[in-house]
Image 1 (cartoon, protein in one colour):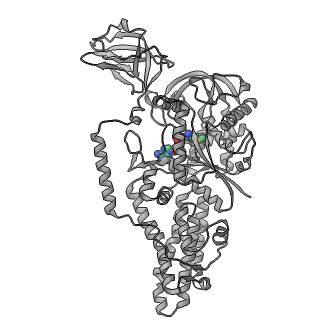
Image 2 (cartoon, protein in one colour):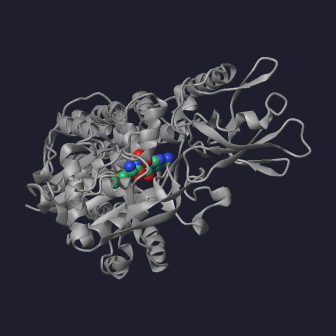
Image 3 (tube, helix red, strand yellow):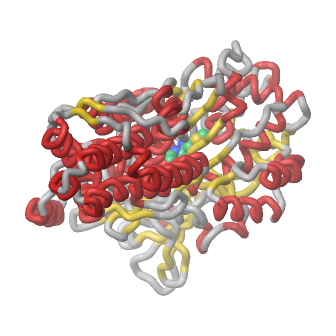
Length: 634
Ligand code: MSP
């Protein structure tokens, strides 16, 4: 039996799921269901990415161990996918024992092959993106080119992977395999990135612990694996790689769904690791765009992050799935708004699909006592059947090329065709003109077209299409896909009255909703309390004063050099000159807001804020007992 392996990215556990995660997962789920329908033996995995500095920091800020924190958030992801009835076969956690072992086995294999060597890394690291950068790649003030947050300077002993060695082989893969990276536009970006030259990649860290240790054979305790190496290997862990290899036969047809922000890791680093492991490369890495909300970038600070569960509860899970899959051309960015989802539900689902089912049941009840015979269908309406067939071919090709929006567009051409023939041939008129056979054949045409629609739409909207199948009395499975979609088989029906598939969402309701939302936002504005998420954005650290002096020309300012446990001390200016003598502060520990944007005060750079309490005068904050420089306060 043909095999297919579908993966989502494994999600970081530093935060709960949002619409972007739901989007990737729902596309992957649709593909997995489609492959099953086509008769592939399909394995579909998702899971959580739990190591790395970002997770360690998020846990610390909440006073939890990284594992406790990961358990909590990973559980929430899993629950959400279960609530969404995502048809995954395996939910992996990178803290699973079997994953730790697989990552170590893979590391050892690459090391023994001579693709990993020890050196020293010196450069910049963005904790938020878990990515290394060179100075020339950074934005102003050494900020990360991907997320805009400040990067850290890192200088540490590190193992490197010989990425440069695989440059030509990767380019060759892109060239020889049209579907290697999808969509095409994204592939072009990756090709020019690789053609620009690949540098060897630092793949271990020593400055924190929350990661997978190197294999024992390498005997180097202080290193943990770079989180991206650890994470990518998860796709092999799931298949039993280097353990029992039980499911490795799925590997030949692997499709990785990813967002555009993580394409480079999947389309450049991952193939290089696989080549080093002597494994075949995936069939496709398919990258989608990003969602905005009402035209704006989503962010926690703006409070406009779309919660997928809320949307699914408000509009129906399957309507939400349809919206996500249909709204945006795959690969491009898309915008979520209430109006957009309501428009799709009202016009395409309710007026288009729902109405078609009602009309078929209505006509069959009225004209043929709920029996639909297709014997004269080809005789009267062969042209329409041929037309539908073309749409079907296009639809399938589109989904094979991971373009779910265009898949649905083609399916909806069949919906429109079916609704259109009713208006065009007017069955009531045919009956009046005593053309009973033609009228029956017309109802049969609509029923057969709707059957094709329901089978093709099943991976996108499993329950809705099941309702259609129940109402018309047919089965959706691999056999019916083969017979009805691929071989154009025509069937007869016994129909049943059924509840409408969709309910129209009235504009009024929408207005009310928007009003309550506005009221809510207003209320939120008036309430100045912050959430734990807001608090967790602050990085407050303990640091030791190495130097302190007055700033010339200012009565208020002292200039500090403070050791925050980082590679270089930070220079920070603070308005406490009236209350302290510089010399008495040297050697003292203070608390510093460390992720404040760098700013200039009296022409001098200040890289943070020293915290003090105010009660008429300013008193510096410190800890109850001495702690290591750089300790996080939270
Ligand atoms: N842990 C890594 C993936 C490792 S895979 C070996 C990671 N995790 S993530 O949780 O940050 O992101 C997971 C996915 O969510 C990515 O595919 C990303 O593109 C997607 N999205 C995050 N924000 C998004 C939007 N606003 N819109 C659409 N998708 C976005 O990266």
